[in-house]
Length: 137
Image 1 (cartoon, helix red, strand yellow):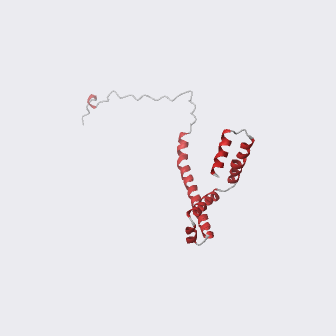
Image 2 (cartoon, rainbow, N blue to C red):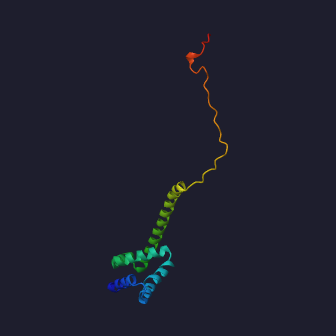
Image 3 (cartoon, one colour):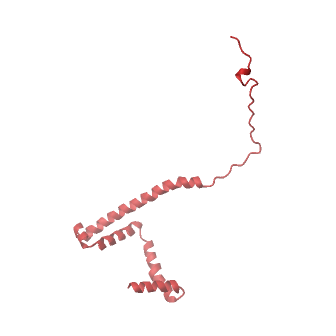
């Protein structure tokens, strides 16, 4: 079975213009992708978890109390994982958004025709205390 799948992949990759390659692409790529696109992310996580539980062996299913209990636990676990992924994405967006706003180019303010001139601060002729005339008290 694996050899047939590998052979089909080689035919689709090397000879994409053949009618059989286009048909294989429709059956093996486009149809499953269309079905997966209709699924909600929680359902995809659920399928992955149930697959893992089924691959782990029958003992775990029996310890959980049967297949129905194992699937219920898998559904609950998939909901937790989906909520955790949503929180991770939200926190990442909250941290990245201010950084991206900082990198965003800001429009330059137009320069005014007449610039403000600063008045020069002139020092008094008696800038040093030693040079002032002494005041007798």
